Length: 186
Image (cartoon, rainbow, N blue to C red; front, side):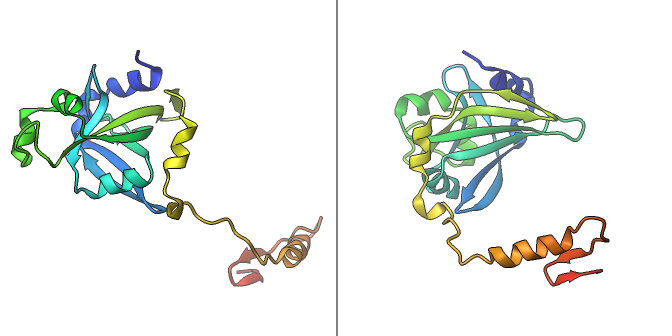
């Protein structure tokens, strides 16, 4: 069953060749151009090599974004997804295209061939957001602990910050610009 996020993205199917997949390396987003595909059996997917950086990144953090430019205007459709990497032969068979031979795959049983399946949770296009599949909370446990930033533990300068804020925002007083270099007119 197709949800409204998938329906919106499918209206831009002709632009799939120039989709941008953004995964994360730690806390750093890594965008790359991919050939987004769709079929009725698998939904949205891409084919990739087992040795690609995106595979190791998705194994550590399956939350990704896929952007598709619709060919007009300034807005892109941005799909917020979870990604699943598979080497299951049934999936490889369904995803296979002879075009993959042009980029070095020997066939459906190539040991390097992987398929990344996308579950769309929402698609943002312009100022509208289209809902998709709910996020499975168990996915959060799959994020590598070293890729989650530690919570700040202090010491915090709460007293100094409060004093600064009180000084800056006195009622009926001219304000000064607060910068990284301190408080002043510049």
